[in-house]
Amino acid sequence: MASEKTPASSSKRLANALSQVICTPSWLTWDPDANHDLSWGMNILFGLSAGFSVANLYYSHPILNILADDFGISYERSALVPTVIQAGYAGGLLFIIPLGDIVRRRPMTLSLIFATAMFWLGCTLTHSFPAFLGMSFLVGLLTVTPQLMFPLTVQYAPQRHRATMISVVMSGIVFGILVARLLSGVITQYISWRNVFWMSFGLQVLIWLLLFFFMPDYPVLRPGTSYPRILLKIIQLPFLKPDLTQEAFIAFLTMGMFTSFWTTLTFQLADVFQLSTLVIGLFALIGISPAFLNPVISRLLTARLHPHGTLIIAHLVSLAAICIGTFVGTFSLAGPVIWAFFGDLGINTIIVANRVAIANVDPKAQNAVNSVYMVFTFCGQLFGTAAGNALYARGGWTHSGALNIAQMIAGLILIALRGPHEKRWVGWRGGWDLRIPKTEGKTEESTEPSRLQDDIEANAETKKEVATEDEGLTDVDIDSGKGGKEITRLR
Image 1 (tube, rainbow, N blue to C red):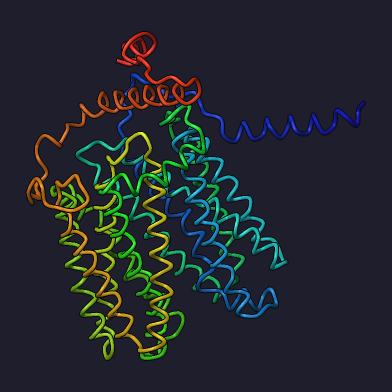
Image 2 (cartoon, rainbow, N blue to C red):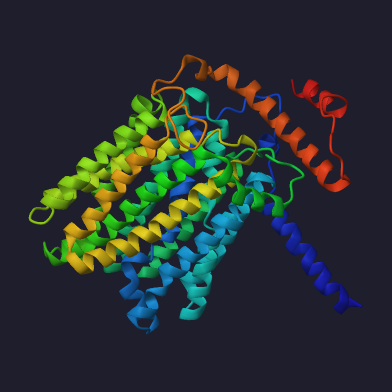
């Protein structure tokens, strides 16, 4: 009997421990009557969480040769590490992010960071390459926290600060990507790659602690919706929402250009300009600089123009930087430097404008919308890396640069095909006025009642869907009874 109770008691203790990991302190429980506008402090915390999380995907990139030597494997096998991590990340985008619409986002975020930290600790300690590879896949699968931060920022940022707050999260991600490459190469050269991983583990624990004590327990967007139904939503959205599809294809082209540049830049700096590995790693500092300027650009430009206007300006700036970098970069370092700075500044601005443009595509399925957008982004990264490397191997810097020029021109064509106020797939109905109408700018005080009403409507629609699906009803009255009482209570 005692032996039978032992597994049950162990499972109970484990369940109790896990419940403590994701429990909600009393001061963070959700109060529907309180003002829940996102504060700047929470916005910065979201940006740091996104940056330190996404860095997990890139620490291994500059140290593949060191990993090969330490595990006693070939360089070809060590190259599987970033591939496996990215494959896991793709799986997370498709199958984990949609859960953010149907479960509570605080325990989901804390659970993901905690599990990622544990698998990362395993990567740090193991001396078996197959185990390292398997845990790297799980790390990639669970490192989707940054993509939970964007929908939360879009939903709870005050309207007049939305563009700037989105840019803060975006800057955190860019900062995390570039600093991960930089610190990983520098620390590994002088100490050990395991110290890099220990540092990352500590940062993840720190982020978990900060979110545990400060992240509110946000309500569920679509309570009662099933997981298969939200996955079906991801398939349907690109065919139903022209604005989402347009911005997703622009993201594909933009990230294709970004990854093509940074992948082939290493070869150009090493082969043509004979720079050392350390100097090439420090080159990433040029790309970090625009991340700090991005919130300023968003406040001065993105917040005052329709996203179409911001996209046009950012594409033209990026296109000019790419042309200079492509043709000057064959004989002078000034070319890559100009491209790295102004090109990254343009790309960051494009991404923030895209996020603002898709903010209201479907307020009741924000994480599903984000999944669609990020799948296109991820595919663009794969395309840019593969095509850029192939063209550089065939014709050098100018050939890969020509691809990037073509991608920016294609982005401008996509913008021109569909006007800023067009509701259909192609056309210019509504004109080309790129100013934000005053009616769109809500005051900070008016955003919370509107958000509450949106949450009520989301819950009502979800109840209607569930009732129709499970009971075979064709019409559900949600304007009276319990629904009316809920609206009265929340107001």
